[in-house]
Image (cartoon, rainbow, N blue to C red; front, top):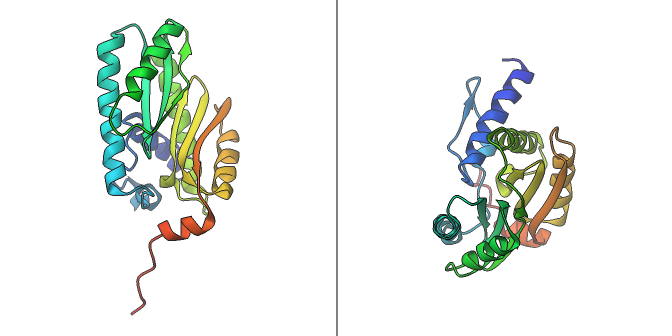
Length: 209
């Protein structure tokens, strides 16, 4: 399979994973080869991972109950810090959504990036998913990054980056995102850790036989 075609299908596959708000996808097979970068070890504990999944589900449900069809809100939780993106019709709705999420169990902090405007179109959302896929594919290709250490979401051309990463990784990932076609702006919502902390999170290599 030609490299250009492989990267195209890889972008689509990753976009599909991103649209389901999953942090880790099952191994994908592109051209007969498993894409190992997508199943790298998550830097959260299993308990925190489950907390994040629960936060997203409960927050989304409560937002639907409170907002109804008046807006379009995405909820992304990483290490119990919640990023809110999307659109609502009024400043009061924006504040209300944030308050609803802050009351959800285990939420540590909320970053409210919701815009007061009409809902984005399906065409715009599809374009955003493809942009997210391209960013993730570029991270997979970068040999000096663990792609699964990052959560990537794009809203109306603005790409948001989340994760527990070092300053070196944050800078590298930001440069990759800024150089990706379709990205108009990059917003970083990182939890910065030291290189020493990263070493503690990295599984030790198995002893050689």
